[in-house]
Image 1: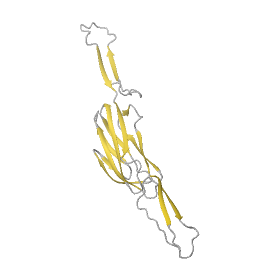
Image 2: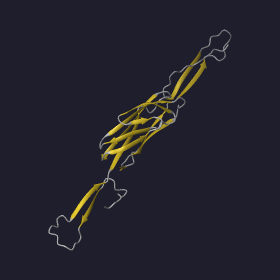
Image 3: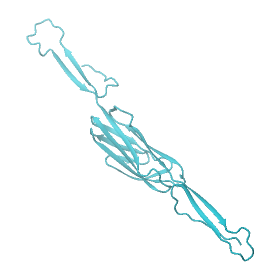
Image 4: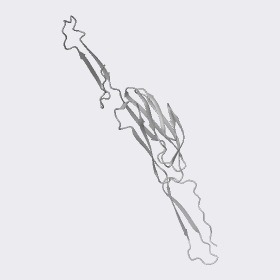
Length: 212
């Protein structure tokens, strides 16, 4: 028996090992079976990770949905696949669904398990944008953290989705039609409010108490 180690960097390649009888003292009437070969293919896979968010410019308190998809582009079956997706600061994970495997919210660990060549799996996370995040850019990362095989292309194993939490710039302008009235005169105050954006404003209230 000969024990050998498969060299690194050989994923996806096929190697053939041949044994041949070189010499012997007797005569062999049949030389056709004096050599034999065995081939092995080094297993490698190409996992592709994709992450999206349904609303890239939400307001604080809004519900958003992250979708993470992992696909095995082959050429072999992938096993022991794990993806990590932790809730970023400023966003709270509320619930999730997976097309296969299990997800641990606290650790952000999605145990995908087995993916046949050409197969994919999806993790959907329902989340809420935290209060006090107006104007912030919040980045959520997802990355492939485990597999039993070697990935032939690591360029798509770490992905991100950004949101820019909405903020508004409200400007109030007040004027009066006569700044030097006499006693008993009627004056007209005009109050205007402008939302300079970049997002819509909701729940806006304005107080204007007349002086005594």
